[in-house]
Length: 113
Length: 114
Image (cartoon, rainbow over all chains, first blue to last red; front, side, top):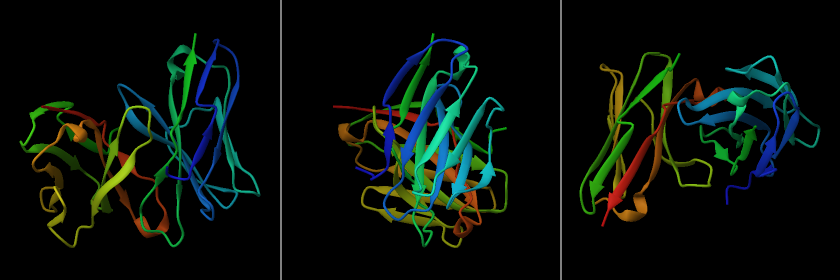
């Protein structure tokens, strides 16, 4: 158990809909990272937050957004969903002091029909 | 644009054999090179990592070999066991102490047969 909690574990929805994925980092970790995992692209970095502030953006679509709240949990919002958004979405947290290691949750599997 | 290229995509090794997975990178600013192991239904977990000031790091049956001039690094799994069957990802990041995100390869699916 990495200590990172993600909900829901599975989500099935229709095209055009909007979903919210939730992540609770390990206790005391200030950094949260979101990754998308698909079969053909591997793990793609989406966005990073540190103590409530956005720190870096990766390959995140404009239809996607995220935020980190004062209690350090984070939410990833996916809107106007398309079939191609079906993937595993992982949240990871990084301890401070930074050792380089990321601790991943077990992911949220999104299926868009 | 994939910043870290990983091969092979899949690998089948007999129990007791050596599994070798290779990665290459272009960004010379990268200074942290971890390998992550992922089992079905689980998130990736750190297996072993190396920084460019050493050419090799060994932890048990797992060894990273690092070639800075060639911008390549590899994972060797000695005496491979069926329990090692998983997906392995190499990754790299720059200024790792500043919290930059990891750039992952596409992964290698390893199957160790009995």
